[in-house]
Length: 80
Image (tube, rainbow, N blue to C red; front, side, top):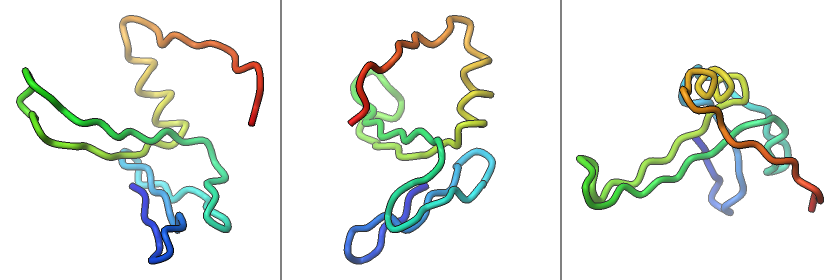
């Protein structure tokens, strides 16, 4: 879960699964994490809900290792 200050700057990120507080310095997340923002739509029991959560890299790895079909991974060619 992300928290922002009154100025909109990122203040903290906590993994929703394990509760680990991730390192944030000067508004920049300094650890591997993934942020989910998903708007559920028609044909879902959550129609109209928007879910926001964060996972640390370890929890993300644990989660995707349970998938029957592996995540499609490609190498990024350029870093901005």
